Image (cartoon, rainbow over all chains, first blue to last red; front, side):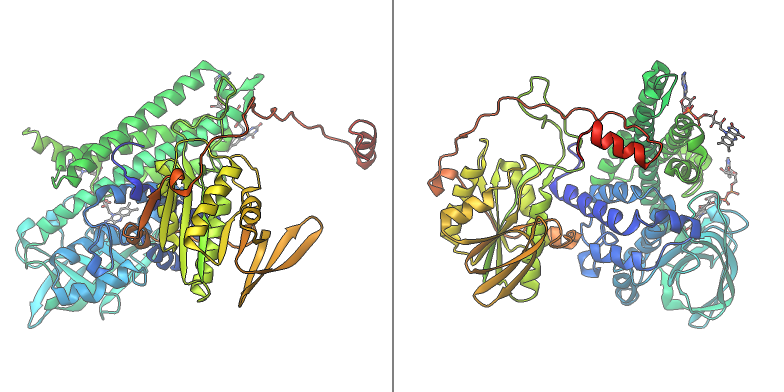
Length: 379
Length: 249
Ligand SMILES: Cc1cc2nc3c(=O)[nH]c(=O)nc-3n(C[C@H](O)[C@H](O)[C@H](O)COP(=O)(O)OP(=O)(O)OC[C@H]3O[C@@H](n4cnc5c(N)ncnc54)[C@H](O)[C@@H]3O)c2cc1C
Ligand SMILES: Cc1cc2nc3c(=O)[nH]c(=O)nc-3n(C[C@H](O)[C@H](O)[C@H](O)COP(=O)(O)OP(=O)(O)OC[C@H]3O[C@@H](n4cnc5c(N)ncnc54)[C@H](O)[C@@H]3O)c2cc1C
């Protein structure tokens, strides 16, 4: 390892690895096929302290401000070989930070601890059927009515959308554009709030992805997260950690695929020798390893900048694009090196390829990342 | 009662060990190290004794280079109360390890010492026995069950052909076998808390022991690569091969 990680991070890795080996790996293929993993995994992860990393101790967390703790845990969680499991367990990481930073203390204290223990599941609802890239133009409305807001509209592609208990939801409270958006904390049981069918996906099968609809859904005004009409900035600041996470998932997915390809080509024989006995195979593996290493080291650099208190918006956007591209090309080559076996569902590398495809779309598409980078470059 | 647990830093069991080109030993450079799996079982057993209210304090000791403190910290995160690090960069062989542990035991006066039956690096399976002999204590080795009963402990041992239960007067030495328990992993908050638990460092000389190897290693070689097996047509051919080729029946 590098100097980015200390002994405590390594111990946390060990715990996470054992957690995955004990509770996840024996069942993950079944959960993938079933399109869901048991709720119990949240509470087990909560007990192990895997959900609380990066959050205040007073709310049940630990390692607040320790970015590399999050990196270490995320890399090891990805060893489950299931992007869906990581996304499902991780939906709290995109839904909770606004609540911790901006919700009223009473609301925050009432819900955060139960999410970090895994008893309650949390989801973030920004994307709408009408569009996800153009966040400033979302259409779900929240109209003031006395001490309440009344929500109308719908959301889609929401991770943990079906079984979450709490939802951080963006809705329009003001005029057009980014200046008219607010965030709300919505309880699962609020009348007028329903969840649609489980969406079938190309990858991330083990995560629950759903549509949400709000039909005259009455939410008390004290459930507002942050300032009225101040939601856009909160959403944007929230993206940094999410994109770092997606970058980590990208290079780790690629790393696992590389390891599988190395193992397979060392054993599989063709034309009287192991597949890696051909120079072209060795060079292919070298190219894969080079990409993975560069992607990982660049992402570590971004994490180090965040650790130093900076907000490296441009670099993290670059890391997300780099890692999702690396993930796609490395998992593709890993499948290729597995021959027909790589196309079979029993080979985890097949799943890695499908799961990795999401990384260029979720958390802001690669095109949107480029727009962001271009702006930062003064173009 | 106070329980002392010994833990050793060894190559992680997942690592494919490589023999050094000059055959003097195995390559340790950049290799992942971890707590010996049998020692993990020892820690777990001590923690369970504490959870049952039988053990009142768990002291964990490790002998080895500075980095062995990592394994002590891990044991502390799993539930041990304090650590003692006997720091040395020398090669520590079983007898020296037993003498160093004796030094610690005489200072700490535990009612029970729990340790792994062997460490997966050298597989000697003798340190626990040596410690018991040096102390003049009873020993229950290869434990698959440990039941403390007042001033006695009943240890069920995995022996060839079955299980044997020995009753030992305390204090005693217990060494763990694989099936004694399933070790837990440390929760992250407990890892953080372990950083604040006391860890004392002592030198072998403080315990009156000089660490000098008595045995020298002549040569280390990798095991022969397994050759491909053969398929037999039927049972008769198998029996024939076992009789006439392998000559085992
Ligand atoms: C599995 C999964 C889980 C998800 N989980 C969540 C979640 O938990 N919460 C949540 O809120 N959302 C979630 N999303 C939604 C995700 O954030 C959006 O899919 C993403 O932001 C893209 O939005 P869109 O799908 O509406 O695509 P669109 O915005 O319709 O984009 C379509 C295409 O147009 C391109 N495009 C758009 N604008 C521009 C431009 N200005 N310049 C160039 N090209 C452009 C895009 O790059 C893309 O290629 C999830 C999505 C998936 C697939
Ligand atoms: C969905 C599906 C349907 C199929 N249907 C049929 C069918 O109906 N009938 C049938 O007979 N077969 C069928 N196949 C098998 C298919 O033809 C083989 O999978 C394919 O030929 C590759 O062989 P392999 O899987 O044994 O890979 P391997 O031969 O083991 O190859 C593994 C990797 O090594 C590489 N490699 C091998 N030799 C060399 C070399 N000399 N130099 C460089 N690289 C090398 C390969 O390119 C590949 O990347 C099917 C496969 C699939 C996935």
